[in-house]
Amino acid sequence: MAEIEFDERSKKLNLKWVLFFFLIVIIFLAYGAFKNNLIFTGNFIKEEQIKNSIKINANLGVSEMDFKGNYGSLIINNPKESAVYIGNSKFELENNLENSLVIENFDGRINFDSLKILALDGKSSKIIINKVQILPDSGSSIKIRIESPASYSSLSIQDNFFIDKLDYTTSGIIELKKTNNILTVNNEEIVIRNFYGNMSSSGGKFNIFGEVSELLIKGNETISIKAE
Amino acid sequence: MFKRSKESKKSKALLVINNSRKAYIPVYIMIILVLSIIIYIWNNSLNINKYSILLVILFFIIALKYTEIHRMIHRWEITQDNFIHVSGLINKRVKKLDFFAISDIEVSQTPWQRLLGYGNINIHQFSEVVSLKDINHPQRVADLLENTIELKREKMETKERKDTMKKWPK
Image 1 (tube, helix red, strand yellow):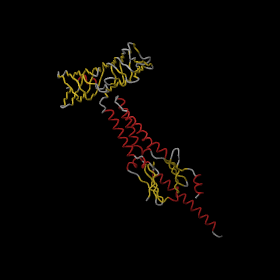
Image 2 (cartoon, rainbow over the protein chains, first blue to last red):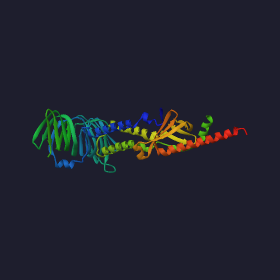
Image 3 (cartoon, rainbow over the protein chains, first blue to last red):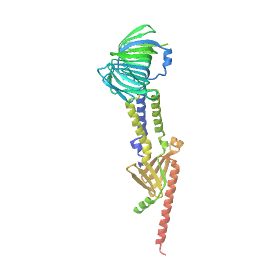
């Protein structure tokens, strides 16, 4: 017996396909949110972290870093080859000048590698560009972003710098105060959890100085150090 | 035949039927889940990569096509003379089922459909079965359809009887 379905949905787009697509979306969202190793966000466990931590001072190599959060101050020395938009104003970063950019109470995203700041986008309560102070016209914050990737000589984030997880392969030296150990990392994967402190990037070196709750080095041998 | 279709053109719809939104509940739940995850990610300043955003937009388009647009596109009408399926939004397609061609009407409901009060109607027409899926109150619709068919048949029989009486020699 022939069957005619006025409802053509079952032939073209049935619920199984919608469900399949839904699962793909969920997997992508979850993967993007939780598995992207170089995206570090959130301040929610900061207090817990301070109570329960190991002091660390690490000089490592710079991979492409992407940080998002609310930081005390972001200092960039000698940014060049781009322009900065602060509010509605554009400031050219002249190549022949020793530019400096200080962003206080920065709330936003910074993406950089060893040579360039690839993205900078957020808001701040006070910006000092080449010793000129810029305050918000109205409200408590002013928007800031860079037009295109800008080279820099050094950048640092001081006060309130928090990373929930940093996971990448690098080389360098990690000094731990808890065990008074100096660990040399040679092209090995490191995992740092719940770091709170300061960070700087200069001359291809990435320095973090502060406290962590856990450090994992995955090389020939796996070293795991956790705060008690 | 021509006369009948002309009549049916004039006849008003006794009932206009659309797909039940209850049938789309799983898709609505999926949409709510995706939105909740996005809000969670947003509130916790987690990362959403551009591919995820594209996928989410695509998912919403597919979900919209599967639910609301599908509902807008398909409509059934019961008139005094026939049963009509209207499909399309810009390009319209109208398909009519003559009442005289309908031999049987069957209502089927899964436990989930019974719980929510919707179901499917299968209209048997000679060797074919026409299925109306996910209709609210399918039993009531089937009853109305049966009554309308019965009424139409009675009318035709009365008319035929009258015609025969007229032809009968006095």
